[in-house]
Image (tube, rainbow, N blue to C red; front, side, top):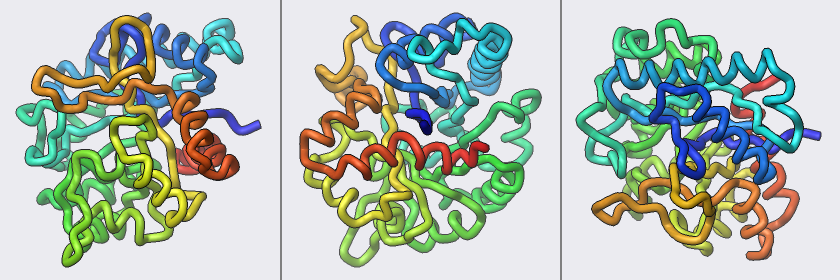
Length: 292
């Protein structure tokens, strides 16, 4: 059976990826595993280059620990850590959301390699704002190396999103959140994600990030093979999920609070087709990552 995979998860309980300790990443994997998630791609926050590399080192070491020790990846006990999702730092400061815009960098190969050197083998997804100068070239560079590029934290027009897609971007990160919405004279990146059949889109399907009616609209109109449910889960205290929105000090949504397994059950209760939901947490994420 194809495993349940979350391609965008920052944390769980008291742990998140802002750490230099691989045990924190292994704890996140255990908590996701206990919630019915089989595999995760931990998402690294944009920060200083040194801090991001420390966070990446923790994830890479956790991956190596799981490979060496079968007990750390026992089915039903711990989610497999598949690699790293770099959510930035090549993002639009005007669409930072709860991320720290002061850490964003120009999308150049040199800046990417400052972050990625030594970790290229475990980077699976990179989120980039396609409208930034240099973004299409970096998207081509990354996609040519087998990395899934998601477009997000973006004020891109439809044409700018299309340029990113033509450069090799494969997805749109947490659709409608931290991005230009749909206008009747400019469909923007959100409209692009719904109108172009081949593009994948991430959906945070908790009760807080998207209207239930909009989620139903996405599942009615988008190719069912291109929808990916993600948690975007962040550190919470206590270790409870789904009860309330996770917000920062300004009241902005800071990330998700519901696992993709919980989100899938919620969507089934809304009457969304069970087969489409199952594809969105199993088959589609693995295809997006181009896993063997």
